Length: 357
Image 1 (cartoon, one colour):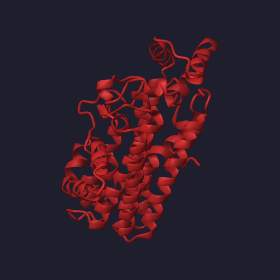
Image 2: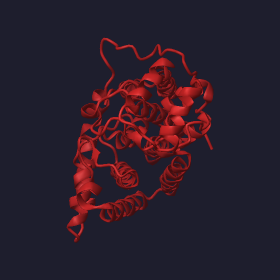
Image 3: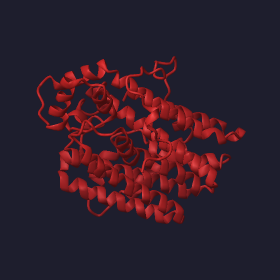
Image 4: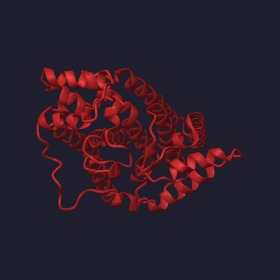
């Protein structure tokens, strides 16, 4: 089911974006990363400790993905949720560190599985694990990381948190399966797309932020506020990711440009372009995205059709709308000792809807 924050009205095909003009100082994660730097040192240490195994291939393969970069936004959400509740603390609790590690393991496991399903050979600018070690090893190491994540969740000693993150893990799998069922259908309903991205991306951001608040003793209002913040930030993040596949180059993204197009993934720019398409253009989308019959210049033609119907601009506007909803969820955090972190979280939301990589 689509969460209450996800509405079709947030997305108006063909409306030029007004919130993505280049600002004088583009938003970034710098402030949030700086505030939580000491915590992230502990998270990274815990990641390394919990990746160990008597089977050498496990830390080798898992380490290849985890050490390859990435913004670590999901564990940052957990740490921020814990810190904004206990705003006087300078370092998060041991339980919050473990939960942040668990969240990163869940995310890494899904990436390993996704790359196998998508037959991807590049992520974050380097070869994927499945390209180097094969599909079997990638799937099994992904399973290992899921198991480690659940160990860490149990160790947190909070049954509510265990329920939140385990439910999110199930939702991720459901969404990935639903994404497979709509692949190749350019006439997919907007509601179905939103349901997919909520499940495959936004729900883990939401669960991470809410779990951090909950483990730190936050009440229902605070926990729900962090949930809504993470959910809307995640929606903005995924919509931007989908738009970047048609606008950025491979060097910017760290993966092959146009992968979503060739994989016949139905994303927001495709849906919006299809809704505005004439008969000839709809025939193009059915030949390519529907039948998988691609010609050499088809990706450039897809970009041209999207440009004509302002599908990318409308996608950017949708991402901005969700980022603004994420910011609005933080209004309850108005205590003086919460101000700096709340500001950093608002900038992180803006970054999710503005990023170019």
